[in-house]
Length: 101
Image (tube, rainbow, N blue to C red):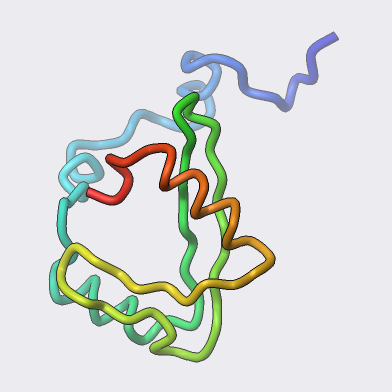
């Protein structure tokens, strides 16, 4: 028996959440603009999403004092490694080279 609260199809999802508007689709960038860099540089928390080749997704919260993420350039963030979750993120990124492009 399927739980009525579990969404298993796009149709079920769209019944609850409408499709993203064109404005949302335009938010996809290959680099960070100045306002995104400023926001990240002042944030004590970020979420890193990675996926493996089978598209299994993992979201890892990363946090520390504001400024813990260094912004090397508009397309490169330097995030401190934490021993507890770092191995999983590193293995997913290394198995999917396009994640670091």
